[in-house]
Length: 485
Image (tube, rainbow, N blue to C red; front, side):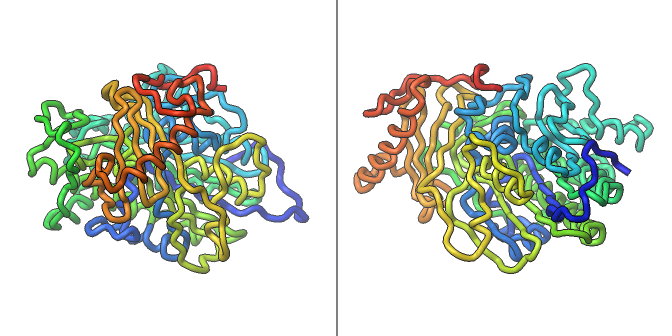
């Protein structure tokens, strides 16, 4: 029996609902069958979407792992939680972290898989953690629980990276491990152990946190075989993407044109990774239906950001484009009463107040996220007119970006060069046509530019706007240490 620090609730205390939060890393927002993807097979997640609420315009407000997760677990936007881009080894010193508030409210809280917290292995409110941080081993004392488990099951004769792939590469191939030893399988195996050994007198919050489909693109062979003979849709390449049409000379390249046969393998391996995770989620759901019988259970599925996957000759994340910034999001309530699709724009920090509201926990005084529960119920729900996202320059100084979208149009502004882009997402969902210089869209461009001017004027420390115009030539820092509290 897993022990916890909270005392048992009395019989007069209303039972709080159980919460299963399934989180993935680098899963594109379009890669669900329920979203109409022509190839990707995700039947178990589609079932949750068909009896829950599917958010079709969900975005990462800072599309890389650490910053996005900081938003999820604090409810704060990047300019407030202080992570404007990607930087490793920056301590998480936030108060009122989501798992801590749930633990304090009487939940038994656990996480299996990736957190990207630092120092590595810290729980930050989780009572129990089975940790896998990919191949990042920053701290000598850090224990990668999956590596230890794999060693136990193979006698130390096999390691996860023996397949020759790397953790930020576009290169794909089948895993050398049998399916039962794959990391995706381990996440669910340990989650099932947690469910079966839980404290049945307390409500449960379990974060099932897959590292994949983040590279390495190493699905089990059985999953890769699902896509062996499936024709893939064309790779979108915009009329603006010539600058990225370069020869690829590095297996970890973030831009460039791959030979078609290699890009096809990359995409098949990525889709296969997704399908394998979906099958493991189906395995989890089977056990969940048997094990969680007392009290209602909410299931939330999301990702921290997407993956460009060769779209526009780009790979990885940090970009404002749909492949990178849009994420899948499903909220499945206990009654599973109706299918709803919410097309209003939402961001990952909205998960924080949503989960706290589900748990009946009072919200902290300062949060930027908004609860999504009104969008899961009948009747009108207040919506933002648009959402804001950003990312400090990562692969190149001229890639620092600010963006706005309402899910129907998107405006992108590059902070160093001042370059603007405008996309009509309804007519052009893969962002093939940049309308920023189209004469007939000047008023729309001015409208979106004005919104960005007003928004950034409230951040004078950045020097990006004086309230009248956008000011290019700035490269924002990855983190603001003074805000990491």
